[in-house]
Picture 1 (cartoon, rainbow, N blue to C red):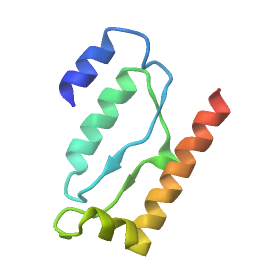
Picture 2 (cartoon, rainbow, N blue to C red; picture 1 turned 90 degrees about the vertical axis):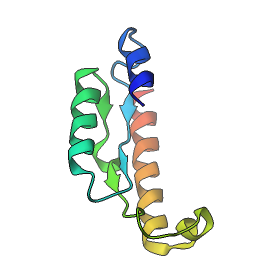
Picture 3 (cartoon, rainbow, N blue to C red; picture 1 turned 180 degrees about the vertical axis):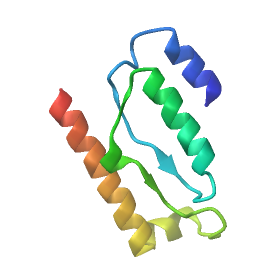
Picture 4 (tube, rainbow, N blue to C red; picture 1 turned 60 degrees about the horizontal axis):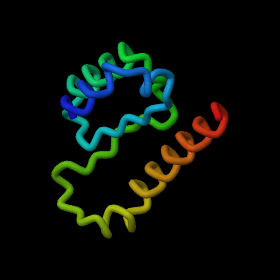
Length: 91
């Protein structure tokens, strides 16, 4: 992730782009806050409605089980919808 951000900071391709932050662990609040600060300093636009924490860490769910889990699936779909709406409104 750091290398990808290092590549992006040197150009303007990332400026004002909508960004969705997904956190898979409620314990990672400090990492999420640090990433949020870096993304903000890079002038990206964080879509708050699309930035969610989904408690997957430790759940032992497979990819198919995550999709089938109604609460997780609903949260992810709502976040993706918010990101899509944000992207469409800036086009």
